[in-house]
Image (cartoon, rainbow, N blue to C red):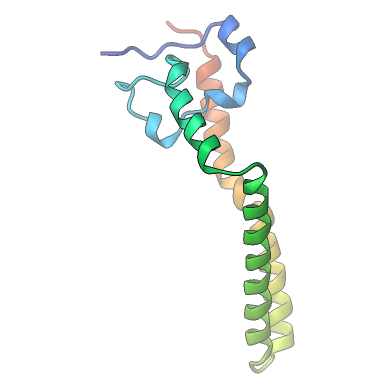
Length: 123
């Protein structure tokens, strides 16, 4: 059985704080975490480097962003075609913008709590 430990000050100085947040696969405390055995990351990093071209992720992000904007415009155009569509489209546009700008906030409490729990000293 592996006992979860709090990172020492030396480990915290080596890695940025955001790297100590648990990922979905790390919830099981009986599994070894990547920070306990960093060599586990090497095969994943090498595989990623072999399978992806430089800056490919930026191009994919821009493409996804463009597709999302096109979908939003198509949706707004369909709403405008209904009765009272201009008013509805304006309201929908505002709601979509609000959603896109605030959707990440739902993750914030989890990261704050993880940071607090990690910074606590063990008993």
